[in-house]
Length: 317
Ligand code: TXA
Ligand code: MG
Image (tube, rainbow, N blue to C red):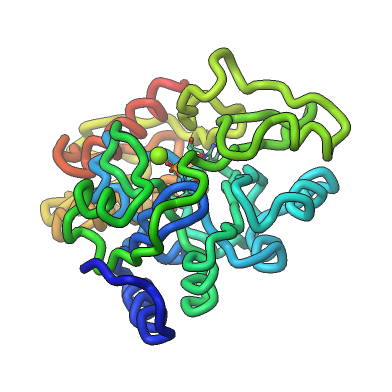
């Protein structure tokens, strides 16, 4: 439902929807985002289902301010300087997750970093204030399509998938945020966007390097050094777990097994499986098993993204 966001009542309703695990689309100064409670993996999995993404891409987590951001990520001196200069605004910082970070691992696609941004748009800020939650939000378009800059665009892309679409008019910048990572050898630009490179370089007093070849090319977790690769080997399409293995099960027909086992979804629900996937992978890896046996997971809906991630984890060895 599309709502012109004005009264406190609109924001309280949107906050309740988020707290209940529903999706709320909202305007930012860059583009419209499709938001979910970033602490709730099931809600975050809904975003991937709604966008029909064939892969898990890490998402930007929107926070009200710098103070909230420090609850989730580690800020180096440089990162703090950038936040101070440009937040709230169209700058996203990719930072190491804190050890006990409460954010869903799915927002990071299993990486040990998280992308954070404090948006400047009045509607986004009122929503963050009302919800008192960090909000994971990619652009509110279906996968492979351009980012929406009006509530009507969002409706055309996603129909009634979001429980609410907060209409805050046309986005003033109309271009996604600039994404910066502070790497060991200095700050890198991962995606150019609404905040010009020169303005960032002026604050830092140094040049930004571009990540990998093409600037602005979409970045997949596999390209990142910090990418979470399990120590255990992965055996796919396993129906018969063996001694020494840990079992990543799926569905109601999981075999009885004495070793460490996590069922991604006992009912065979792929959205539930996606919500549990990264934490399960980590937990099974931490058992120290030599190998993780993974039951077959259907290639439909979010199963495609789960299989993509599993195949890459299996190939990394
Ligand atoms: O302006 C924007 O940034 C909009 C509004 C809604 O805030 N959001 C947006 O989100 O464009 P999305 O999901 O469409 O793009 C997020 C970008 C992707 O290029 C993704 O690869 C990168 O941020 N990203 C997110 N987390 C990352 C991480 N941990 N490491 C590296 N890149 C990350
Ligand atoms: Mg996008």
